Image (cartoon, rainbow, N blue to C red; front, side, top):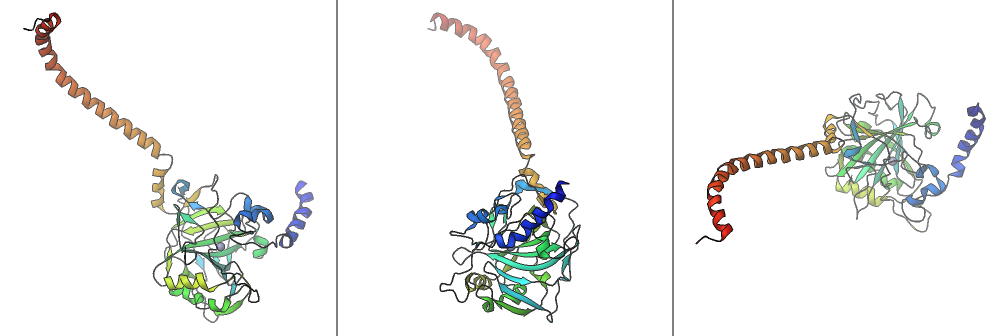
Amino acid sequence: MHFLSFTPILLLQLTNLPVLHAAKWTYTGQEGQQYWSKHYPYCGGSFQSPIDIESELLRFDPTLGPVEVQNYDLSSDEQLTLGNNGHSVQLSLPHKMYISSLPHRYTAAQLHLHWGSTSKPAGSEHLVNSQQYAAELHVVHFNSDKYPNMSMAVDKSDGLAVLGVLIEVGEFNPAFEHFLKFINDVKYSDQRVQIPGFNIRALLPVRLDEYFRYDGSLTTPPCYPSVLWTVFRNHVTISHKQFLALATTLYSSHTQDSTAVPLNSNFRKPQPADSRVVLVSFKEADESWINTGLLVPILVGSALGVVLIMSLICCLIRQKRAGPRQDKNKGAGYNIGEKDEYGSRV
Ligand SMILES: [Zn+2]
């Protein structure tokens, strides 16, 4: 009953959201991330992303199988839209691409990146044990079993699934070049260009079986807590030149704006993990038990053991020494003691 009476209000609010929440936002400055929650209350709420994936948060989950993606190998005949939305460079993805290894089918919608700057080439959103990578790729999918499109799914708790790929500067990456070579055509906000399809799978790490999984949010306003996050354990590389192209080519301003505002360092700071755990699909991370509850008992136990053994050794040594000395002292002591006591040594 309550649900029925609340539904019209909820629908009204959701319908108005795009209008109410059209406020401008940036990563730094007066509309920077510390102020996002003024216009976008979810940004100040719970289950926020990104997070620092620390060993203390990890829990091995043997039920987490490899991530399986379907129809990621796109033909070059297929046209994709590459665009600059003022916050990132984004590539639209066809709905035939999907993740098949989750309880629901999650259909691809778009991919985009977050990156640092030339002066500070650290721009990944997720950190691993406080380590920030140069950049991060997000491949965004929506739950197409339950929702007809991205905008209906975006604010639902089971609405989105995002694949996160950490990027380091190193070897040249030919897969990233498929779209990076066109970013000169989308220098300014709202510019778009059609580019040929390519194998999107090649943007992901080779191993799709090793990843971190947790419940989080969009990392940009309106920060809905609607994302099932998969962050791959293994990073990929792009060359220094490719990183420079990302960090120096784009602007968050429009062509006609009097001041060109460079688009870089477009990452959100890590958010509190609160009571969340991060599930891990790979056994090695299970060694994190060393860093969790068992470490203290093991250390205390070991220390007590060492103390006990040292005490025993000391006792044994003392006993061994004490035996003959006592005998000696008994005889000598008696005599010496007598002499000492009475000052009659001479
Ligand atoms: Zn993102």
